[in-house]
Image 1: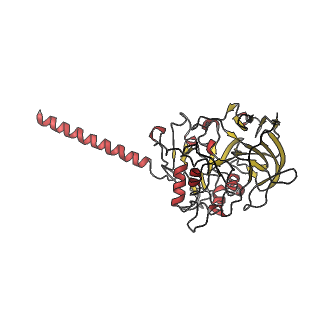
Image 2 (image 1 turned 135 degrees about the vertical axis):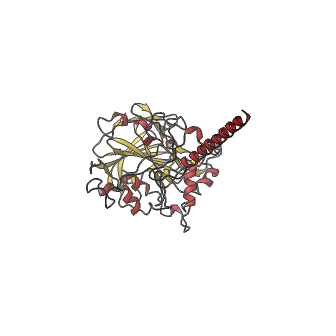
Image 3 (image 1 turned 30 degrees about the vertical axis):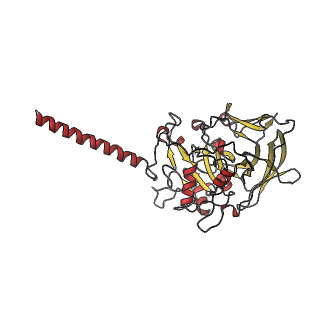
Length: 405
């Protein structure tokens, strides 16, 4: 009996060691850099704590070059060692609430497909105070990439996939003619930008960055499909950018903002409110994506709701707000191919409307070429001066109208 017990104990020990090694191997495998078929899956409970946040009680004397907001000298010291992140954040109803949008300096919103909108968040000054989890990150469209191109030519561009013509099953590796129109081929555009290459500033969570920079979090919204779970860490994205030669300066010593043209900013000056509620739709019969901005005179800002609900940030538990709302009317075209992609023209000129300080202004937007900055003008042709703070740009079809109360 003693010999049998000894053998049994030995067998059980070996099995225990095997199970421990297998579990460790699984965890290591799970968090490896992603390929087209393997992406890190990390639950919320596994994520480490973010770095300590900077004291927000410090004097705010430093102007953010992105939106003119004032920050402390400590925060400026952090952002000056980085370049902007331009991240694609989705807005499908199953992905709500988003994480991190309240920390974006500028937000662009446009339809991605089928009347469902998507966001491009520009993160720079607002993320200096602490690490921000952003997401869900989703695929890119060409017009979002063109807006991102305004932020120093090589921002840290964050997305997961995008419209493309790649077909690994086809003999020539390309999709059939007409499947994806050339004008909406985002991968080709990013290649033309010289962003999409090994070690480039294009950070595609599906192919070029892995955990702990980007990962899938299945616990964030229980029951959500996997396409709604991709997250990113701003601190880790900045760190990866620096490793790749995309810090405040590139590997050749050229500052990211050498070609960057900042907008004009002015201190807030609230007056008797004349525009206290702005409501509109992107597409008819898509009420979940209808938007209402309500003016809050106590903070001189606009609070956002969509689909009849307050638009919240999961991380801060706060309602999204902006000091400036811009309506940039763009020509809508599509669907332009068999995959039903839409195209919105954000080069050229068009009508614009602005809301700040409780007031409404009419004007135009202009951007002659890809290398130019979009500039917003009033009716007299004078460049708009934005109130210091978050700027939210709503790119809506040119034949749409908005309701103002």
